[in-house]
Length: 187
Image (tube, rainbow, N blue to C red):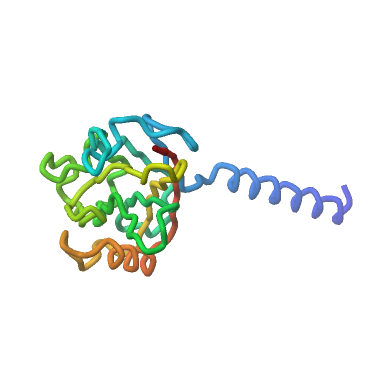
C-alpha cells in the first residue's frame, strides 16, 4: 500500500474514533419522572394559597452528564411569563453536593430534610423552599422552567435568607453548564 494511502487510512480511522467519542459524550440534561418537556403541571405542584388550591409538592428531578470540574449543583424554578415587575422565583436550591444527581418529589420542603446538605432560599412568596405555580387568572398559560446548574464552586457563600435574585446572580457567575425542563399551567 502506498504511503499516502496508508496515511489517509490512518487519518480516517482517527476521525471515526473522535466521532465515536463525541457521540458517546453525555450532554448535561434535566429530566423528571413526573413531567416531560411542555407538560401541564398537576395540582400536586401548584401553590396552596392566593386562590390556588395545589398541594405545593416539588416534583422529582434528576440530571446527568455534568461537565468535568463540577463541584456542586443548584436548581431553580422560575415563572418566565410573570410580569417584569414581579419576582417569579418559585424554588431556589443551592450547595447541592456534586455526587447528588436527583431531588426526590417533596424535596422542596426544607423541614422534610430530603437534601440536608443543600440550602433552599426564599421563594418570591417569602418562605424558604418550593412554592408551587400559581399564575394570575386570565393571563393564559405561564411557562415554568426548572433549571439545574453545574457549578465550579463547592458552595455559594449565601444562606437561606438570601434573596432569590442574589442567589441567581451567584449561580450565573459560577456556572459551568445548565439544563432545563419547561412545563406550563394557566388559570
